[in-house]
Image (cartoon, rainbow, N blue to C red; front, side, top):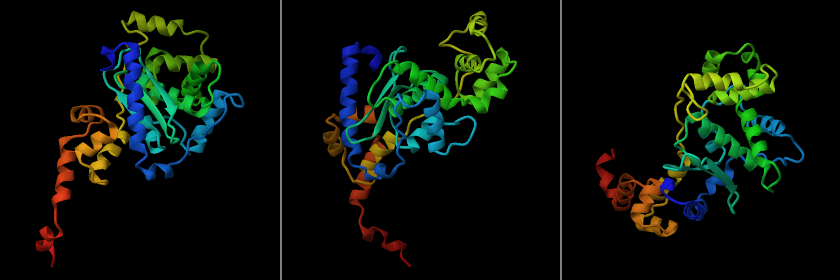
Length: 280
């Protein structure tokens, strides 16, 4: 678990996962046909413009994004969930050498923070392939406007109160804090102190807000791993050699289950004659 590692060991853990995932992805030509990410230089466009362009590029409907994880995985984003990561560890992203977008993310965060972090990393991927200055603030602005476009929510933020913010959190899947920033950005409130005071007075905090949202679960990477057994006819030993892990590590990190292995063994041993009794 990442929480039990020092920073140097955590970096080593993540580096090894990057190498393994690169090896996994090279076996799947189907990923080459997934729609590309829109790449826009942050020096030419503002984070708000890039966020709006992303939604337009992917033809997203107006309003909330119900499941951000499913959306981004459908666009080819590989999400590696870090289960057991330290609380202060959110995530990071990069483009693989084969041109696939990859995000490592702490899945133990509250769902609203997880979604914002995922959108934040999307901002890095589409704006900062060449690096840059002030990129964290830019990615935050991108995430806020990608998840909560001004034109779609501004009519809902007039005359807000703490109760209405909780309702909006359920609708939009972002934190009360993020909604407060959006209200301030649109000129509906002057500062955020009243929101924070209300949180603290109700024994909440910035990392422990009211309203628990359902968590999203990344699936694409594990589906690809299962495909080695179901479609590519790999044995567990062959998969372990591919990712350079022992069997227990492969099962733990990539959730390769005994059922996957049993399915592969069944397919390997089955004969066409076994189905003769089904013929008319």
